[in-house]
Length: 197
Image (cartoon, rainbow, N blue to C red; front, side):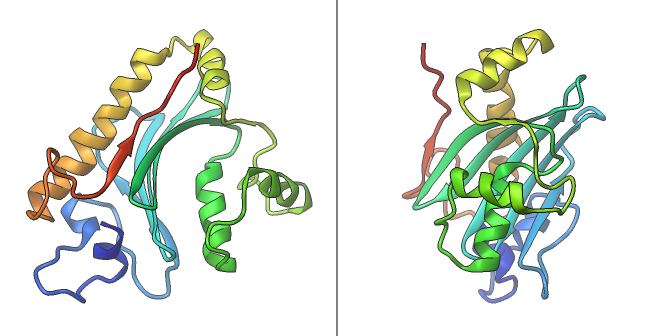
């Protein structure tokens, strides 16, 4: 899917990813990373986007502005044939995953920047609202934080299924790739979020 967008028009018959999923914009030169907004019938305080870019960047990201001004992110990030799910609470309108991907593309470090290094960069940066002052990335901490907002594990699982299967994959397999399907993802493994007791 990333290749279909970042190398648009290279392979005859391969649809542009952004067109296949009814995205709001397309990845074009001189872009190096871009969030493609998707119309998914969400409320005013929610958004769904697919972030594509160089260095095989592919992130499906749901964002909700919570009543306390923080953001909830539910994400699926592609790496090494795995689409791994995670959650995050942040005070930034850009997720940690987006910021890390941007940094890794810019510096071509092959994804070697980790959360610890990101924290150090955050302290040194003066770029404004892209660097969070507050964030949680542990699924259990996020779940605990969301309790007063009426969001629980079941809600996260339902929203996750909707964003991945009902919006992104359904549109891609209907309008983009007929080689695979929701039931046959080839060698890609979906790694769901784990909440430990």
